[in-house]
Image (cartoon, rainbow, N blue to C red; front, top):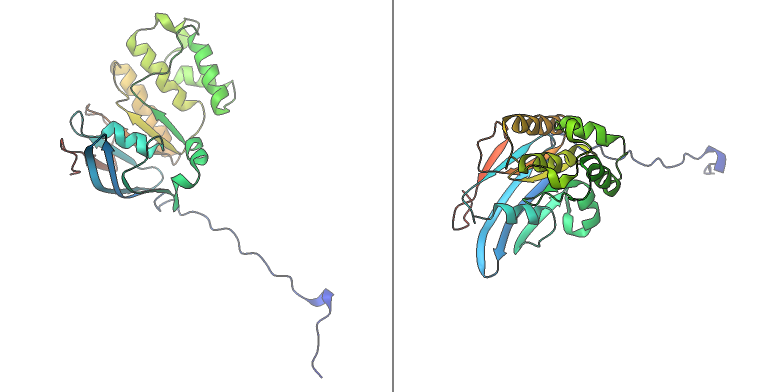
Length: 232
């Protein structure tokens, strides 16, 4: 006679523990990427992978496609060909999740002239779901305390750029996409920018930075886009 286990003696199946992402494995992976502007092919066959804490430096002449590449990485423009994945999943499958994991700084500062410096930060904090108290930390990060109550319409170009950059420190984001972030900054502003990027990387953040300036970024890799669009 075969024995049959009673319900109380049976062992319930145990669900496997969820896989923990390897911090050294690529989080952002780009394969065979191509981008067009109108009828013009900017680049094709582009590929790279970035793990947490890494920084990719984008260089190349004007018109080579640096800004276009950042827009594609942000999910704002669709690539002409290729694949962009975050932890193995194409970003196109969940655009909302991809937007939440990144901060994209463009040439436009997005500053509201009628609001004070602090009010601009409070506005951005509300958009990102960051605690309002983070505005004070952002002010300190870019040396804006003395002009905190000044309407943004009175700011110099460098001060506006600092204010735009300060939003990066309002709430953590896994991926920073920065287009010419040092534009209009003085030496102190550049130092504060570099410190913010270093802190972001130290916390496991990834950065892709397009710049003409030779910033002391200590990149993990550099990608130069040629004038006619071929990656080198």
